[in-house]
Image (cartoon, rainbow, N blue to C red; front, side):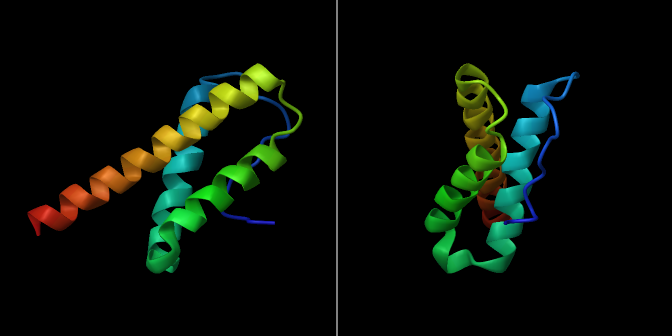
Length: 87
């Protein structure tokens, strides 16, 4: 099990979208630091890991959560690209 993705024992009561966004953001920043050459495959693995660790959520909540994880991942990638261009 990937220990870099936070799991929730129950859906967070405050701002679950923010928590899911941060799951994706943190997974992306860690994956980039560890395996930059397999980044796309790592993204798919992170999404699958998130989904399997959140099976306690209903389908609609999982779908919204995955959207937020993707958005967090993409934001981390975009910010890294901007930092690289600025340097």
